[in-house]
Amino acid sequence: MVNWKNWNLFLTTVLLCLSINLSYAQPAIQSSINKQEILIGEQFTLTIKADFSKNNYIFHWPIVTDSMAHFEVVNSKIDSIYNNQNLLGIVNTITFTSFDSGKWVLPSLLVKVETIKQDSSFTFFTDSLPVIVSFSTSDTTKQIRDIKPIKEAETTNSIGYWIVGILVLLLLTALYIRWRKRKNKDPHTNKLSKLTAYEEAMQELKNLEEYNLSIREEVKIFHSKMGVIFKQYLSRVYLSAYSNKTTDEILLLLKVQQYNHELLSKVSASLRCGDAVKFAKYLPPILESAEAKKSIEVLIEVIQKNAALNTSTEIKDSKKTN
Image (cartoon, rainbow, N blue to C red; front, side, top):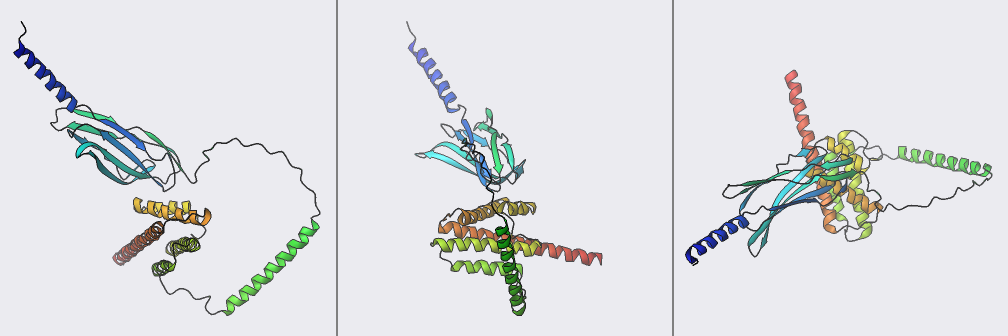
């Protein structure tokens, strides 16, 4: 004869154990990056996602320093995933950037998970992920191109070319001499700006607000002038010729000054936006152009404050020595 009382007790115990095991089943941890190839100064994000059935866990997310080998942290944030007010998971998003060109590996990070009762814990490591940092995007099509046949050089009489070349050279020399004479006669050409580098840059950036950013031609002028203003400011502050520097060269030079990673990343996006407008006929949204100008203004203000601080320190040091 079956003892139903004992049988019910047994089933209840088994179900209780199963429910406890299910409620504390290990959460699933996944990691991924949104880009495997970036330009110098460009941002990419590492996403660490933890899926679980109930809010029974305490997560100890990776403590990432401001910089690691070849990578620098811009920011980090944690978001929760809900469904009908039920917590289903947590997402930790870490934004990185890099100013070192090459093929690097983003190292694996430690994620420690404990139950609320702290009667058990789990340890996870994120995947180590490869990232390529380059000066320009590589050709991902990998198409095989035909080898063109060798063409025979055409023989022509070069005397005519020499005569034309000499005439052009004489004409350019005459124009240059005439321009120099006019420049020396103009009393305004040799006047130096009475404004400081900071005042001049901020005034010219203020003048950019006159352009209509909904008109393609004015957008092109807006970004072209903004780049010139920024390079002129850097040239005056650092007493070096920045006018002919490329975007990548400027970013590397600014990186040496150890400014805020997030600000440098925004300036990087601003300068690359200007390059895209000038060379790729890109028409950015009005907000993007406004944000590009704002990031340039902020960096100029930061550079100005640092320059003033350094000058003050030098004056104090000189007084001490005297």
